[in-house]
Structures are given as structure tokens and as C-alpha cells.
Image 1 (spheres, rainbow, N blue to C red):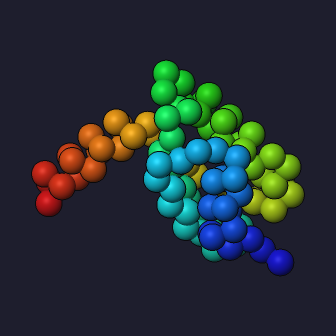
Image 2: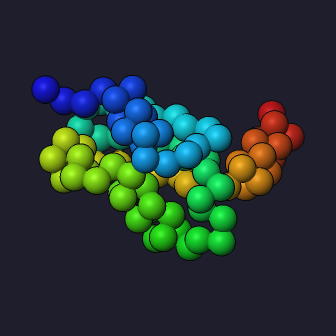
Length: 87
């Protein structure tokens, strides 16, 4: 049985405090927008490692692929404001 986006979302939320979390996918390939203050001062690879640590063995055993956008709350607000201004 393949994991659902909701299940992957719960896996991430259980291991990482997020102020915003979106997960979409088809059971094997997932995309996620993850907003957490744990990412403050971290480089992109470090942010991804934080998410992989939250997922643990599930990344190898259940989830085939995960594409991530990782941001702090401030980065997310700036991106949201920029997107709103362009609409």
C-alpha cells in the first residue's frame, strides 16, 4: 500500500514543528511546501536533511521521491506577498 499525501504530511509534522505544511502526491512521488523556524540560518541541503531526519526510514521504505520547498515563516510571507502583488 502506498502512502497518501495526508500520511506523508503527518510524518513530517510528527518530526518537525511547521507553521505551514502542504503535501501533494500520487502515492510514490510527492511535493511539499514546508515552513518551519527550524530552517532559520540553514542552507538548502541542511533544510532537506532536517526533513529527511523527520521522515526517518520512511524515506527509504515508503516514499519513492519527495520534492521540497523549505522556507522560514519570513521567507514564506515574502513569497506569498510577492505572489499576491503579481496577481
